[in-house]
Each structure stands twice: as structure tokens, then as C-alpha cells.
Length: 412
Image (cartoon, rainbow, N blue to C red):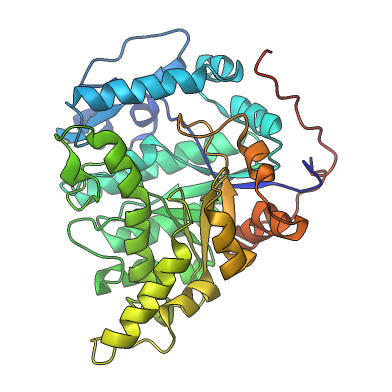
């Protein structure tokens, strides 16, 4: 396809899972005993809408084992602001009408990729992540929810396995079962990555000893973990949760949550010693912007040099060196503040995503916005393809240079 002469890989394109996914894919006895329930905001019951197949666009919350997700489920302001953003987003291009009617299926996703000029996408879930974001989920039930999502996602990507790559969701409630699911998904379903929750779950941080079985498995499988925050969460240790119930909490919490949760995950993986113990483990930190990464690595180095000697687990390099050896971070397609950071740190650590079809994404203009950033051709090539291909170990697909880029027009 080679838009502007560049192959493009989306580091974390999204699926919008239908409300019957778990009813169809969840194993027994979980399917019949206590299946998840979805609603449209303020715990409003979803109603059938022929223009929104499977309510794929209308779901704003869920109840799992009687537990509500997100924590702001009853807040009117959050519902109104989310719906308003969604209306504005869906009005930007007629493709959304088609995608909604098809339930955001694989065919409509491939069409959106053609519009943006994206050759390959690594597919991350939406509700598949959110449904696991409650500390009180029973670990076996959480694992079953992840397993059901992964089976569905693998079927979804099989529509075009050359262009749609599968990232497996893991339930972080138990690292041993998460490691087993990672092995199953990579070896049996063809997953190219796993998706990790950056927040602590039940107070367990990523660098705690309990997580070691997962890091060992990922190193053995040679697949990366993509840490991806989500706004629909009821995890107790969520950076945005302290604002729930206060005026204007939704934009404040959303602005803070993603970068802060990724900062914590980077600290655990580098300063916490995980990457010291697992030098072949690859990590990506996604959808939290990147303009802060240069400062954050400086801050971690500074704090390690001052307070690291005498700590329980020693590391042999500075935190920033582990990041440069094993990590990648996604910048937003229109993130002008990241331009200077890319120049300072070097382009080799950055990837990008269109964030389709999330309402706060820039479709159908994400790639157009990226090309408007003042990067040279080599930097563009690295961010759009080379780095992402190295992260996920994906070869250049046959015929990628010959597919036409769809005409983008808001008036279609």
C-alpha cells in the first residue's frame, strides 16, 4: 500500500466486541451460571438497534459476577460526555455507519485500514480488556473471560491473517494461569503478542515475585507484552479513580490515567528489575502518549542513582538502558510534543496507532496527521513500520506495496 512511500503497521488497532461474545464463547459452567451483562450507560439496558449490530458501539459498561465495571457507571456526566464524543466521532466519516451496521466486524476493519492506508494491524480488544478490570473477580472466572475473548479474537483475525494480527488478552489475577493462556494463544491460536494490564491487580505489581511465571513464559515464547490502559475500569489502584464523583472528573481522569499507569508499568519493568532478570522480554507501552518518556527515563535514572544502592533487588544498568534495550512506546498520530522527544531519544523506540475505531481517535485522518509532523523520511519509516515489525516479529507481507490506498472523503 505504501502511503507516502511508507509501509504502515498499526501497533494497536481496536476491535469493538459485540454483547454476545461471552454468551457464545465462554466455557461452561461459567456461561450458564453467571454470564456477563452489558449496558449502555448509567446501567441502562441495551436495546436492539439494526444500525448497531451486537450493540458493538453502544456498550458503556458491564456487570461481571455482580461486579460493576467501570467505577463511574452511575455518573451522568461521564455518560453524557462519552456519548457526545462518540456522536462527533461517528459523524466524521460515512464508514462508521457501515462499520456499526456490521458490528465492527473484520471486513469493516479492513475497509477502515484501507482508508487510512494501513497495511497490517495488531488487534487489541476494547471490552476484552475492560471486562477483566475488577480486583474482586474470581481468578478462574477472569481466566475464563480472557480465554473466551482470545478464541473470538483469533476467529476475527482469521478473516485476513496476513493483515490482522492477534494480541491475546491475559487475566492478571493469577500469573500462573496467565502464563498458561499465553502459551495456548501463541502455540495454538497464532497470537503475536499478549496484552497486559499496567495497573496493579489486587495490589500485585508487575515486578513482584508472583508475576515471574508470566515473564518466564513470554521470554520462552519470544512474544512481547503490550501494556494498554483502559478508561472503563473498577480496579482499586486506578490513577483516575480518585476523581470519580467530583465535578468534571471524566476529562481529568482520562488525561491522567493512561500516561500515569504506563509510567508505573515502565518503572516496574525497568527499575523493578524485571528486564534485568529477563533480557529477552520485549515490552510496548501503548495509548498513553509519549511526550513524557524522555523526562520519565531521566527521572527513573536519577532516583535509582540516589536511592537504588541498598535496595532489595539490584539492577546492573540504569533504568533508561533497559528501556532502550527492550522497550517501545506509542505516540499519538497528532502528538506534536513527541517530535522533540523522538529527536532526543532516537526514533528506534517509537510506534504509532490510528486508534480506530475509538471515539477519541482521529480516523479517517490519523495517518494524515502523522505525516504532518516534522519527521524526516527515515524517522517516518521507523515509526510506521520498522520498529513495530521488530517489536512483534512480523515480516513484510507479500503484496503490501501494491494495494491501493482508499480515497478518503468526508463527503462520500
